[in-house]
Image (cartoon, rainbow, N blue to C red):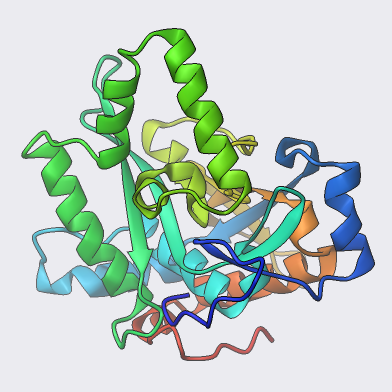
Length: 296
């Protein structure tokens, strides 16, 4: 979170050590040490009628950078992570940590063609700000998209990889070994954490924007990212009321992959209730992070 606590022994540069974890969550990383061995995959069908109304209302003033369904989903996930802090936990070196910040990573395609380059976008949220999650995300993405598509700029991670790929393989192996050593001991450079997509709270991919149907994406053992979200393509879906009557509504499916070690099933289920509540009442995203939401 943005309001950092006093550092204690065992804390990392990017996370607070969770020392009061129960025996199961303390022992699990010794039985299953790799993040990719602990993937829990969930799927959530999102009805878009309320979100579409909300986006249309936000765009009534005709802003240069339009609000979109994607912005609403990303802001809702950030808000949920704030209210449900275990969703922002991660394991490193067999220890459990709470991340000190909420951040989201995206891939930005310069153009929707095969040979167009890709770059990374990372949004950091100030959870103490009076600005809402949606306004923070919209403002930062506007600058990022303009820089990528209008000024043809790359992000820090892409620039770094462009340099490193020129090194001989054995030097690159040594470099990455050094990075992993620092990361395992919580001493990774803050500037590296700031630009690396696998050291953020959640990685999101809007596969629906390229008409790709996918509901699962793996996690990575590198870094600290415990949460990956795929946003599917919009489509018409049948919904039934209690009397069995059917109505076709626009919807999409979210594919959620998460490290199951960071919390239990009940915690994940209650977190999804918060996310659903926001999708059903997107006006909640106009409130600051500190505003509470009753999941019921």
